[in-house]
Length: 82
Image (cartoon, rainbow, N blue to C red; front, side, top):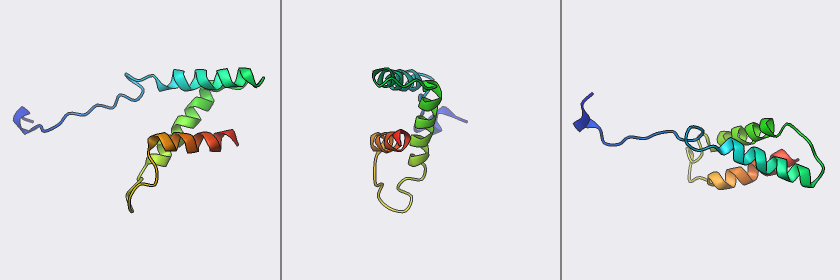
């Protein structure tokens, strides 16, 4: 590989530089405390994130995307809360 042939560098920072897990886990735990609910918030945060990512796979492959990543998070939260 030669450097002149490189047109772009990209990095996956979702989980390495960006700590999404702590934020989601703590937000779920805080809501749970307000409502007297105790669960494995870390496991729930993982399910939430996995479901959100699954909703983004192949999105737009057959036409314009119906939603963005923020909306996928909102849809995932509704499903999780059921």
